[in-house]
Amino acid sequence: MPSQLPEKTIIAPEEDKKHLGLEIFERVENINRRGFLKQTSLATLFAMVGTSIPFYRNLPDGFIPAAVAQENLLIGKNGLTLLENQPLNAETPPELLDDAITPTNRHFIRNNGIPPLEVDPETWMLTIDGFVDNPLALTINDMREQFEVVTMALMLECCGNGRAFFDPPVKGNQWTYGAVACSEWTGVRLKDVLEKAGVQSNVVYTAHYGADTHLSGNPDILPISRGLPISKAMTDNILIAFEMNGASLHPMNGAPLRLVVPGWPASTSQKWLTRIELRDQVHDGALMTGMSYRVPAYPISPGQEVPIEDFVIIERMPVKSLVTFPANGAKTDIETQVRGHAWSGDRTVRRVDISIDFGSTWIETELDAPINSGAWQNWQTNIKFPLEGYYEIWARATDSEGVMQPFAIDWNPKGYINNTMHRVGIRVN
Ligand SMILES: Nc1nc2c(c(=O)[nH]1)N[C@H]1C(S)=C(S)[C@@H](COP(=O)(O)O)O[C@H]1N2
Ligand SMILES: [Mo]
Image (cartoon, rainbow, N blue to C red; front, top):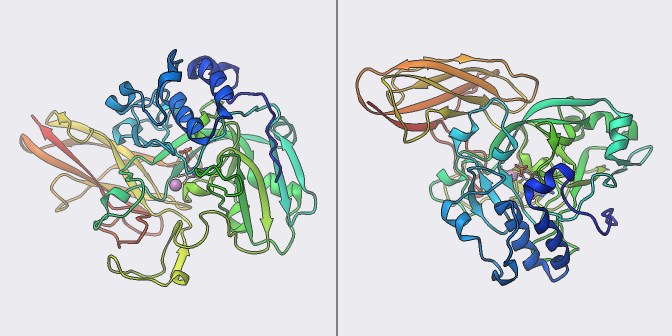
């Protein structure tokens, strides 16, 4: 697929330039061509510092600005914990996910490759091809004109969220709780676009392509290209999104265009989206095969060898909840509100219970309906502790099929879909 990217444009629309440090964008353009390593470190820099660095030329390759490294913060992504620099990966502490709608500056970042630095929302093209009656090539303006534009709160969770808690440990980014978010996305329905293209009867799977490049710098290898069963792709709450929380997408969250597939592994939500291909077989793109985003079809013991053909693609994300108030490690009054969110991919959550006595007894919380299909649900309750001292708040969601979050889950080789209960330790005094 030939690159649709224009030669001399920058990543941020006008209103974002100042916020993100326009000078860095311009310099990145010049330095871009000097090689991928330099490009990566600058891509990371610009997301982190949010302003210009006058002596950037003296900053050795691979150095993280000390202010950032020290505080472990990403500017423009306030309060996120940096897990990895190249590629850039950062998660949100649970207490910063307290809002019903996750602000853009708190939406996690999960990159597998090098984000494109030069994008122009005016000329960005999305191609729909493969087994379709009418292949489409659409700009964002075309999409706005030809399809109904919808705004929905949609939750995304990385399959690797909770990987840090696998024992024995599993390689990969050590996400704890915060590779999850529910922002408000504006775009057109994937279904509407696919219908217009005319899905042929032999189609079984979609394949998604983005404009980011592989860490190796080899343009022939894609960092990630995943897909969906066509039946899933044709559901109502999947968006091709060009706005996030009422503004253009954050460059690290896929600007100017991405898929948002709520409730499924967020790896299916291709960022910097350029192409959707309809296939007559299950997609075999980068990170679709082998053990990627797959788990053994049956419970195994840690370290057990599993034949590769026994791995199955992860589809809907399991039932899970998060305590967003109080924060882990907080001091609270003897009476306090406890609150958070809960979700279960393609289902709703029926109840959320909390325990303050290490699971002996459970208290049912007030649980809101999702704002719309694909949004997480908010829950809250007031607690009066019997005495001063250390407590843990445990939260346990049960979904519409009666499936409940477990205390412990089966170990799997890549550390995916850990939906064990969230525990928050607090001191009451
Ligand atoms: N083009 C592209 N799309 C991508 C990725 C990527 O590396 N490149 N990462 C995927 C993964 S694994 C996740 S969890 C989500 C994360 O979305 P976010 O960074 O906006 O939170 O994007 C998905 N889409
Ligand atoms: Mo992910």
